[in-house]
Amino acid sequence: MSRISPELQGRAAPISEPSRAKGSAGRSVPARARQARWNLWAARALLLACLSALGYTLGPIGLGRVAAAGAGLLLALAILLAEQRLRRAALSALLGGAFGGIVGVFAALLVAMVVSRTAEAESTKSFIVYLALLALGFLGVTLGSGRGGELRAEFFSRIVAEKSAPKESVKLLDTSVLIDGRIADICDAQFLDGVLAVPQFVLHELQLVADSSDSLKRQRGRRGLEVLQRMQKMPQVEVRILDDDSSQAGDVDHKLVELARRTGAKIVTNDFNLNKVATVQGLSVLNVNQLANALKPAVLPGESMRVLILREGKEPNQGVAYLDDGTMVVVDGARRMINKSADVIVTSVHQTTAGKMIFGRLDERGDTASPPGRQATAAAVGGRPDGAGRLDSTTRLPEPPLAGRLPRTIFPEPEAD
Image 1 (cartoon, rainbow, N blue to C red):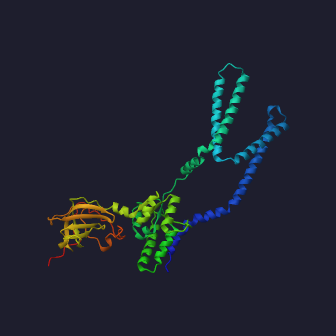
Image 2: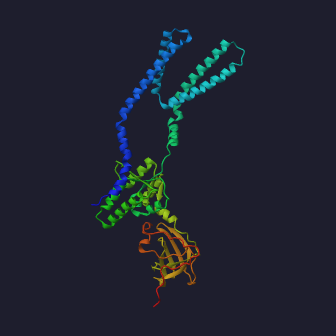
Image 3: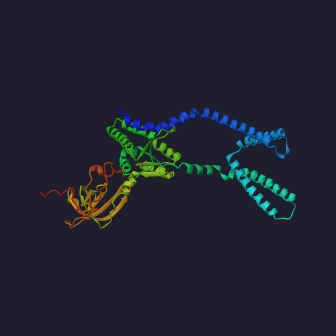
């Protein structure tokens, strides 16, 4: 039975370090709580001592030193009682009360400005100003704390959290995309950024495929592990092994969808059904097959290309060829050109569920060279699309020829007998 290579385990080990740190931090929580309580009681004692000392030293409102110290002590006790009451209040009530109190003080300030312009006695003006300050401040605090739930304190905390720590972009890799292998080339070309995460249940499924008794499945599983190791060695890519394994029952696709819904990550896959299920549930999906289809060169009716006719078509006198990217080309009147290269003029292009199909006819001007960028050759048997419209991982898109280079035929015509 094969196992994950030591190199893969070595790369995955540092990923689980935060979980161990989290456990060690969890054991030190009681010590931190005791230290916080001692600090709080020390601050309360300091408040009592400071207010008593200030009253004894200053002697406000004509009180003696001892009476002033007692008044300062009583004032400190009142502050501590208010602190105990406010500690049990909800955050939304505190925010609402603070906002209402500020509004009440500003309203009282406006009243004081108006009263100062009147010709009333100073005692009357002072009474009205103090009354407005107490009344409006009290109304602002009480009404603000009562309606504080409408401020949605969690909204403000979410804004602060988003500004302080930007959210990283995480992409969950499916088993199919690792076995396919083209994701490594995409990462090597630096077309993917953020964190590429591989959940433990995906890695476990990949290991089961690598341990299969079927030689084909075993080869595919080992290739997936090799692709993962190759991606881990890329300096521009961060591959993270997620230790959060879903405890609920279900297949890997269901667990992957649930994990993407909880974390808000994107899913990278080649599975057609997983793509549809995740899209229906509003999740973001990156499909490598769709990317490969989007990168296929556009072919327009009337353009010419040179292809190798491999076999006969379904209709009489038809020949079938394949481009380097696996696109099927059906050529009318090319049955007699099997195993020969032929110049073809494109008549129509059709997009099917299995991929793109090109229809054309033989170009009577056989000696006319095809324009650069439209010359194509037949792909190998592995380059043909399968029933699901998925290209083999060994297929690569053709590179455009250099400017000024004459097109050449990769598969020369066999000499006539």
